[in-house]
Image 1 (tube, rainbow, N blue to C red):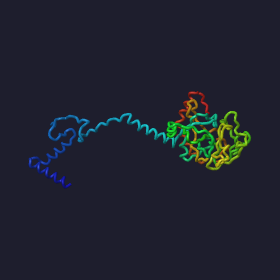
Image 2: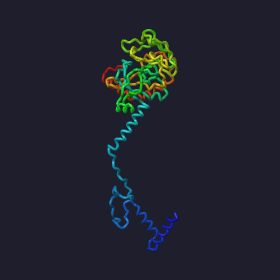
Image 3: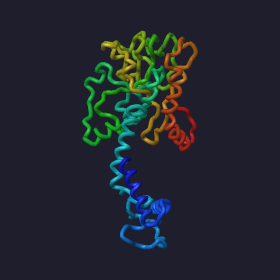
Image 4: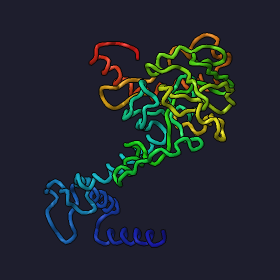
Amino acid sequence: MGDAAVGARSGHEGEERHGRSPGAAYQAADDSVTPGNHTPAGGGDGPGDRRPPTAEGGPGDGAPQAKKPRSFWKELPILIGIALVLALLIKTFLVQAFSIPSDSMQNTLQQGDRVLVDKLTPWFGSEPERGEVVVFHDPDNWLAGEPTPTPNALQQFLSWIGLMPSAEEKDLIKRVVGVGGDTVECKGTGPLRVNGKELNEPYVYPGNTPCSQDDQGGQFKVQVPEGYIWVMGDHRQNSRDSRYNQADKNHGMVPVKEVVGRAVVIAWPVNRWNNLPVPDTFDQSGLDAQAPAGAVLSVAPQGLALAGAAPLVLLRRRWRGDGDGR
């Protein structure tokens, strides 16, 4: 402040000595910062010069400098990075694709089908319900002896970002028959009973019986503990499910914490686009004395997961023109 004040007084005294008033000096200073009227030191054009400022003007120019657009090849790595992050987020929190490796869920699912699994709903606290088709991690070496494919580097990368099913994770897919607190029973060739109610199971593979007559687990009566589910394949005579794993540490039950999510739609091949609803037999009166804790919470998130798949299913039905509700 001291130097500035001194400089201001010296300037005024100099103006007075040359016969100019301080007001004239202030007016000249104001004119010097007016856009378009700046005169470079040491001469130049007169005050009548009205040339427009150029984009390459000096730091005193008020016009913004034009930015050169970034080339496509420089933006491409950024776009790829964003796509990979989005794919990882979708795989982790929303939906993931899985491949059907066996015939244990025929005819609902065929070997080679790709299904989309809803991973969002469990984040809202809901648990698997009867009738749902779910993917779950191998609870206790159920897949012992099954061949494991060896993916190449590209397949491993695509699996990591969720664009291909993982070949390394040991996952299974079955239908939930019983939840915590249920009593599930098979006697003779069936029908299958849950809490004493007979199930009408049109999804069971044609030619199979709902229950299997053997001494390896096909005949059973079990009570499902809380926090577990009892699962069975739709191809009853060709499915190594809860029935045939009762000797493991969970007695054939699958811990709910091992469930990846519910399979909601068949996404591939195109001619098999369809949703995977809960069969009506699980809605019969008296089957469920007490609704599962997560039943109410599952409605809204599940709707989000199905929103993207619904147009595919409707389009397929329109192409076929059958309008059936399989």
